[in-house]
Length: 263
Length: 263
Image (cartoon, rainbow over all chains, first blue to last red; front, side, top):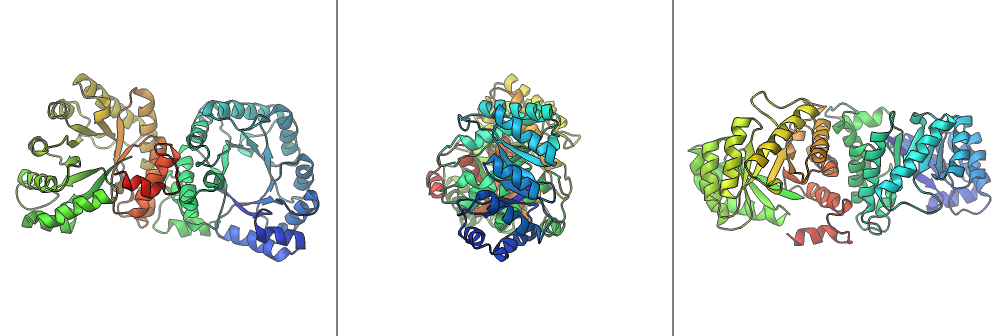
């Protein structure tokens, strides 16, 4: 399970203020605390902050790199911000994200290959998010084809089948699971699968419960990465326990502590 | 999700004493409290109690039937006890269980058909529990074939792919999930799938956590029933939440309360 901590995001008040004030300490604290909680990488998103997105993003990346070598998951929808930001990453970055349309893939996949980055590719295009399994599988196949064409290894590709909130799209959680199941069957070697997990429970009441049960179900069908809240201890315990049950880690009585101390 | 409460079992001290003392109140209390907690049916097992198993079992069934019409899941490995006990059930019973060997199926399936009972069939035979997915799938296919031959509807059949403790058989949880996935693919209509859930965490430290994450993962691949501890509120919440995420129930902010009040 590859855990990408979601908390360095200008959508959150604390991070927004720190970015705008160029105050390193809260950002570095968020980075180190997420890693201590079990995150393997750090998502970085400037969100709706004042100032130029590219400058804010590079400041964030440099600020984080002062305190950790953990992979940075550069989260922006703007290609120009992305292409500048990945160059600021001293370790291999994760490009988050490209859409599944061919023109987008034709510039994002080469960017990943040229910079030695990994790539998150969403199963959505200019028409939006597919409503069903088949639409996601077709876009997933396009992503895999384009990755192979441009020479991106499957180990460096993360397909994100885009989860929508269960209270808005009640069929969507099952459709995402179906897409992961089918895409795993049709590609060998299979790419990785990632989700922006928290979106499943957006505006719902039992957010933490929905997040951790959905994560468990998705890991059961092949999800092996998630952008998620590493500070949610129950969620981290669910992820670690799912790994034990799939024999990705071996059971011992202190398996939770063992997992965290191996990070 | 069909929840079969596991607590009326002579292995537990309270139930054992009540059976041996012919004390109805603790048994009736266990029955009603499990149903209030969300159980749909009640597993009944005399365990290692003194006295004749058939008499203990029939006393238990009659005692429970004084306070509820909920289905009784008659849990005994002895055919003679089973055939007497199902006759004592005033509502359709659940026969728990038969092995997957042909001679066993040839007496248990007709018993289910003749008495209008449902049947739990384990994917194990005189050689024991299969170590892998394939062994379980082959036994599952034998079970389905025998059920069809004797005229038992798939809706009345529960295949139990037999979960072993994760600390003893670390590959077993994934093998059970693989067996459910494949058996669902090869049979149409598919039978039901059930597990004696608590066994996955036998002698483990984080029992409740392992149980609820494993339940979530199994429901994600098609498990639709479990013999489990309905008193474990976190486990019940996991089951209910998994249902929401698979659109078996519709999300509302009070979905947990709505589920329980519909029981």
